[in-house]
Length: 253
Length: 361
Image (cartoon, rainbow over all chains, first blue to last red; front, side, top):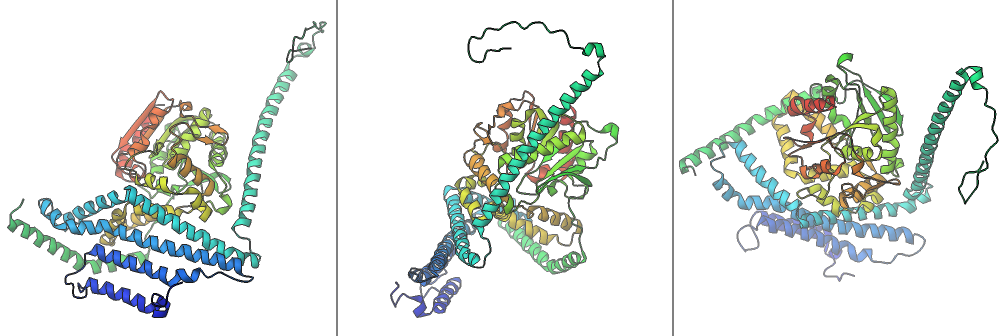
């Protein structure tokens, strides 16, 4: 449980939010409480993202740990789990956005050098824009295809999906209460439908094979029927020769 | 290095150009908005076709032939498109239609429209799509056209499907044509493949039931953030150009018209192909059958774009060596993913070469 001094609800959550914006504004205008000079943009983004993530943690986490009681215990537990997952997602989003801004900040940092190096190729505004776009594209490509960039994105997606799954789970008791089928019930229906379709397809395949076979037999019958009667007369049967069987599978008349 | 005076002049020009651009922008924006409000033609997939077979969400289209009977090629072509986007990109607008180009060249064209799967289709797996829907559709084409075998043309993920299908049902395919088709997923510099290797496919489909088309779109856009931004900046710069806007809107319709992918097939595609790269190693199983690319012995034409970031060249080119075909052609073209199907290069170079290749076989 948060102590009174660190409890943002006691201090006033809006005060905290306004404080974050004040800091942001101060950094943008270059006033850092007498330190002088504007903060590097990277630091500005990082501080804002971290401040917001910490704010969420401090404001919500202690209260989500309160054990639920009574009849609605399951529903409360699931809602709490969803809220916790949402916090984790928001924190990861802040970290990802901070990292996602870095290629742009790298471009701004390198801008004077780029303009100096490529001065001969830049004749008009279109050239300038194209050059900067290409550099920025490369910066992003480097970040997004790096193991760190890919891992950060995967983590963000993982936490978003976890939040969604928990949110869905928190809705399930309410749906059940109103008699509305939820995901689990619909999955039963869909998997049953899928099994039936598979069976139907198999039966249709068998049916098609049978029809082909019947058509072939009909053709044989037609061929036989078309022969002259004498040709169709069965030959006199010779006495069948005895076949000695020497084991399983041997043919016997 | 230019003299300081030149640098100063360049910067002056640049600033003046930017100022002029900004000054003219409000008027262009106003004209563009008025034009958009008045209606801009952005209809797609308008080439006449009949739906000759339908099963669940899938539809089998047969395009009305445009060539005179004497010029028509006897073996039908069946186009298999990706599940994650719709086939409308192949028939974007009159004059920029891959489908019309093939029809005008005398090909008898069929196309599989996978439709828009919903949660009810979430248990459909590769076996259902390939040995079920696709196989039935190809049998229907054979019966409809009177041809015992078809020319199978797969595009992007549909190409991967076509490759697997041909390995499983080689007797029904006369020629295999794969366009922008990845088959080897362990390649460097493929951002989307790299991301896919880190995703938990079970979690994605568990959370959504299907792989949402919008989630896939977000990842595509995120992979090229600068290109995405530039696309809309360019749109704003040319918003008063009716022809440009018309094509832009059509392309937007295609890009963001992404059906959801059923859970089971998404899980297999991400897990077995993207993450474990089983197809090219002949370790993929579909239904009860192992997919052996060596069973593909028909002629193969494998077309890839040299600047394609969705299906990078390194992911497409190994196919020719993996199949058992003696007649295997790999054709690299100077385009990206979409440029193979849309644009002047597609119209003037790529389509004629595909048609010529088919007609020679």
